Length: 100
Image 1 (cartoon, helix red, strand yellow):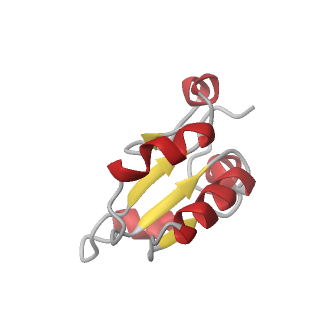
Image 2 (cartoon, one colour; image 1 turned 45 degrees about the horizontal axis):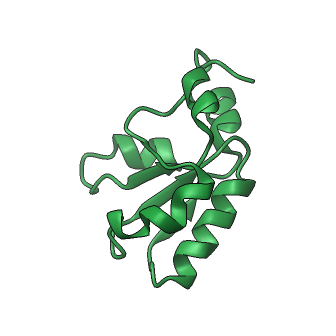
């Protein structure tokens, strides 16, 4: 779904927030994703647009789901979780992406 969204020229691109740790981002990342380690999400909350389509990203989808739930509790209305995280992205969309 995210790949189709990113390549659809008729749709506004989502904000992508990657909640993995810096060492994970050094190994691989989806181009255009904003780095925001999970522990820093509460402190960086105000840097995000509450009305923007926001896709949460992590390794397998659990941390991003947790972060997305937190954002929804803070009034964010358009949160999406990348199912399967970057592991699924590497498997299904970009086989050249490093895995760990």
